[in-house]
Image: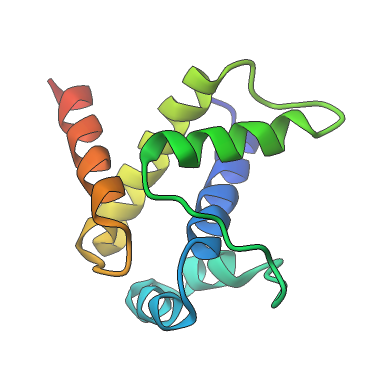
Length: 122
């Protein structure tokens, strides 16, 4: 996966997750992140952003894929490619600052991520 795609995914994964959380949950997440990720997490954040209801991994992937396809030159050819990248990004974020241990994230999403990471490792 290209660096451009990975940067796009990190930014969008964090943005989509942010938009699914309440302000108190966002605060919890920000407090657990290293400063570099805090900057990415809050960049391009509009107060009036529409809230997304992301509870499952497939909802996150679908949302990112649909947004990418609206671009003049989409980066991804399929949802499978986005899914693969999202798992890599989230697993890396977990290694950096314990993403899977943050209670603000939807339980089902965290469960699916942990299962996907374990399946990738097998």
